[in-house]
Image (cartoon, rainbow, N blue to C red; front, side, top):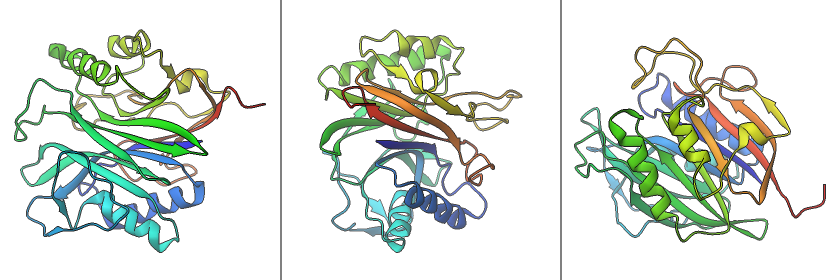
Length: 276
């Protein structure tokens, strides 16, 4: 199983359409099974469209606009002869003009559901957070994957949002992946809170047999305006039945180009029941 997570910073990047093509090329070349994306934006004023049969809606109906970044990415993948099912939901209004949310892509259909993680509920409040869960299939195995974008530790926001995540996942598939932008560095109390969870999650960076790269943010960005350090704030957490064999930072300007203010994380898993 091969997975990817990336905070796309979509429609806020220079040469955004070209970068969308770059992301699609990596997905197609890498033959990923599951992709989790954050800061997946669409312009509020753009035309509403009816997406095709690859779109898997949540139980909360949302309008899909013609410039939805996940939609554009799926269309670029189709040009590369790669069909991915996808789902999307939005948390709040960003920069006064965007619906900002999370997306999931999978080779197989997705049973999608969103949940409210934050105490804030107003879409005009940038601290409102909704995360996206999808149940899908990889090589005959049922997998539940969550694309997350959490708040920072300050003011108890992350702790509350993680508690809501645990409550949402009280009933879950045996194989679980939680991917995304956690806004908490690997040395933080937030990271430790996840590791201490009853969900018994593994940080794939810490357990992978082979690692390439570490930090996912290396400069000052929105929310980390004073940052001068290399930070690991984007994660792939996995249930105990999965063994991370390879962990690689991608879209960091080495093997793959920079496409966002975050780097992406690629992880290859094997089932612990599979022979080595």
